[in-house]
Length: 294
Image (cartoon, rainbow, N blue to C red; front, side, top):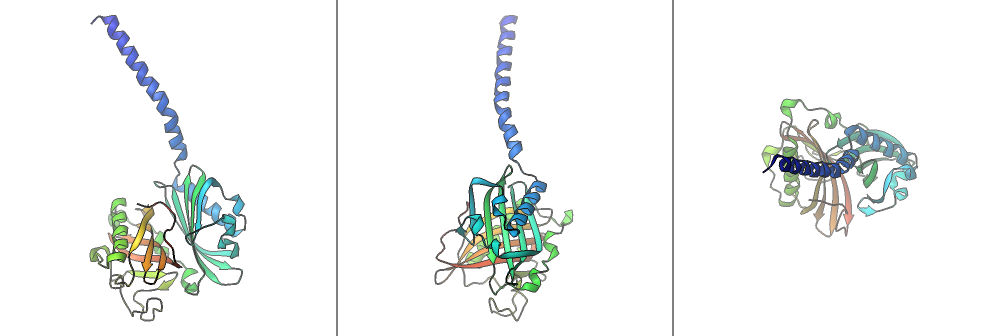
């Protein structure tokens, strides 16, 4: 092949590559713009809490087709039980930039003076909120003393030598939800000496006076015997390896057509669950929580 033909062929190939790169560049820029940093997620949840607790839901930056649900029911944000909140008295936040999701656990005081426990999860694409998922427990089952002082261990950084990978944390969460169905826990997943499970501030395990499950003083492992199941629609929107936390959400079925909307935060240290914070909402005739799941 003559030299001028080779040069022409090279130029044509280079032109095609440059053209393809030019086509791809805008998409890359859009993707970069839509990624949400941990800092931006925390700013978004703080803004959300401020607007909701100040009765300004119209100021929340929602996407036009945002999926908004409270206690599994689709609502307009202005109709949320947040309108009954006079003050936020405690708060913990969890964020995952890889999923663009952030969650706040808040103890709130209602205008009635009662203490409630609220979980608010947001999903962001760019700067817009595409999902709002609220679990609002204002029942008599909320134990105010523990909600006013949320356990700080949930948000502490785990030393590198005691951390689990993201994949391992998700496996532990999925195994736990599988146990809610088959009641066969993987014992190595628990630090059963130190582990405790709480329902809206009520200590369920290692508590002979537990009035929720009423089965005496059981450990995290022995408390998973039922009579519930199956647990469906498993979701893990937020996983934080540095903090050893997993946010897990599922719909747990009980006899007599009752369900529990389960929103849990697991603390994992050295590959073992040592704390489970559940915000449970009892439901009836509920077939779905209304969000995508895998």
